[in-house]
Amino acid sequence: MIEVSNVHHAYGERQVLKGITLTLSERRIAIAGSNGSGKSTFARLLNGLLLPDRGSVTVDGLDTRRDGKAVRRKVGFVFQNPDNQIVFPVVEEDIAFGMKNLGFDKAEIARRTNEILSRYGLEDHRTHPSHLLSGGQKQLLAISGVLVMDPDYIVFDEPTTLLDLRNKKRVIEAINALDQTVIVASHDLDLLSGFDRAIVFDAGKVAFDEVPGIAFERYIKTMT
Amino acid sequence: MFELYHPGTSVLHRLPAGFKILTLVIAGTLIFLASDLPIVAAFFAATAGLYYVAGLTLASAWAQIRPVVWILAVLFVAQGLITGWTMAVFIVLRFASLLMLAGLIALTTRTSDMIDAMERGLWYLRYIGVNPAKVSLALSLALRFIPVLATITRDVREAQKVRGLERSIVAVAIPVIVRTLRMSDDISDAIEARSYDPKI
Amino acid sequence: MTTRDIVYVALFAALTAALGLFPPLTLPVIGVPITAQSLGVMLAGALAGSKRGGLAMVLFLALVAAGLPLLAGGRGGFGIFLGPSGGFLLSWPFAAFVIGWLFERHGGSPPFGLSLAYLALAGIGLVYAIGIPWVAFAAAIPFSKAFMGSMAFVPGDAVKVVLAAVITRAVRKAYPDWSSGK
Image (cartoon, rainbow over all chains, first blue to last red; front, side):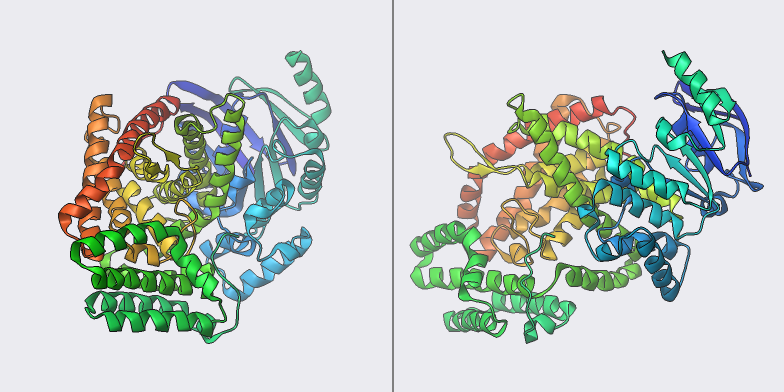
């Protein structure tokens, strides 16, 4: 369970989050909202990439400010642009990076790498330059690099925004197949429609917090 | 993806990369100490011979010199007029041999092996207070992002073509650099999100 | 060195490689080709700062030495350093460091005129101070001849000083929250 209590966050003068309090316990949670609504900032607070200016975020009782390292182990993060998340020149090296940071031994790294590559049909690309993958494959590689670290929660920041329709479908399937608790910040309603809960942000505050159908209907109404 | 390596199975291909680099450094130093034309000529002939051993053609040896051939030509003429033609031959042969030897190593060693050898060499840096793991990460990141930045540069040049600015360094460099800086924020977040701890 | 520092070092090395992809432009009248690559040296110093900029150049040169054809015109390999122009390349980390250091005296953005002076001082002065003796030594020619020969490249480098100053100023405007820390 992730508990967010009275969180404020600003970039310089610009107040992006204005007192957010939420308890996240559902398995599939959508964070929606227009650009600048604060949803990406909110997502980054959940694994301690950003720390709140005021208020607190705890993951299973661990405070992101105090127990940053342990929180990052629990909460994986997938970025909008896989090109910025893939940090190694070769596919298998990139998958191994997080596991090496956690101190896994070679045999375990190899075992998990094999498993994840076959899960996403990337076996043939194992030793390929990551640069040569398609957009969808890159996003799957980014997800792989996070999954092998065995997080309990995975936060996605607009995972489908930069993909074409076919790749988008593949990535949505992959996200829907995950066993972990998934929190997705996005305005891709195709991706979010089957979720358990939808939280719509507007101007740094929670505007609606409902099941997706109702929340999105109201969200679209306010937009038009 | 982009390397000079020429696949093969010769002795030279199989020698460890670190050994080849060391040999080059030593040979390069020694040849600068040599002062006789016959020694340099023998060195040149031996280097050319190694191309044969590696199963490479003399054309690929020539390819190592070709990019700087005009510099060598200028050097030859200048040297000939200033100090005499024997000296000119000596100097030009010395450069040509070194370029060929260095080229030979590039042709017979995978870049990845070369970088592995460098990373192993990096461990000695910790005695002077450099963290080899960080250097190694920087090396990997550079290899990862060279093709990314090359693509971005190409894209921006394409976009500027519409305005006839594709050859303007300023009009291309500014958007490329701004995008690079924005990227760098995400990349550092992505590294830390995967439990990288810079304090280790 | 924070993670962010490491990323900047790697990206400025990669950026210098990307600048090598520009077709060289030939200055009218003098006819010497100039490449955009050495612009990377000045930008690394001016934008990434002394330590990060200098290290970015060390990294770039290490990759060239490893055999990647990253120098303008697709050149690479250890041999480059042993050739006549080796000293110019080896001066790059020092030049980037000094430019960064001078820029840091002014919180990263000195007045335009001063940034021109700084870029010229280290980007041309220091580079030639290391490069020319090397040419003289490696090619066994008198220092004065090496000096005269190198002067042909000064106009091209002067153009690059102006470009680097213009680009640095524009990038800082476009990305104001960017700081070149130490």
